[in-house]
Length: 221
Image (cartoon, rainbow, N blue to C red; front, side, top):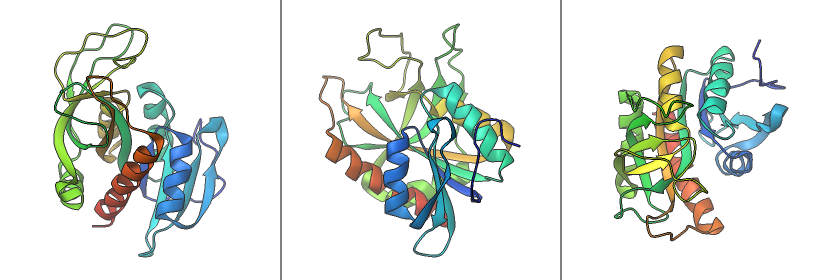
């Protein structure tokens, strides 16, 4: 029995993972026909339903940070999830990345944790990531991500070695997915550039919907 999630309806074998519970609701309404809430325990909102093509899909929030995401993924594995795509956000480390752009994660480095992290490279499932790249087409550029406990631009600025962008979950999900036997891939929306320009709420919603639609097509391919 899962330790954190308390599903009230079935969970699909394929899932889209987002950090923010509000974004989980938004994507469930965008991607599913008559979505049903399958979890509200601990504020980790999750929804299950069918896509317009008739495939079962779950959209599940993972909370904030790598530890929360890894715990949620372990529960999803117990509930039968086999493949998942993270649709998340990131802040740019590469000055060439602008707010609203999408980044297909080809490699994630873990720089979080109490000891600062080892920086070990974590990789997505090659087959699922390739399908996601196909469905994203020219809408996303491949790139590497540094997964941190605190993002650049917060009160403290942790040291970052390499990476096109920084987020808080992708490395943990790739690592945990590998140990659980879940195929994982990720696409991230850039919400802040290196010069401080930020993506507005409307722009983020539109970009997240596009990324979610591409993720859904990749999972169904």
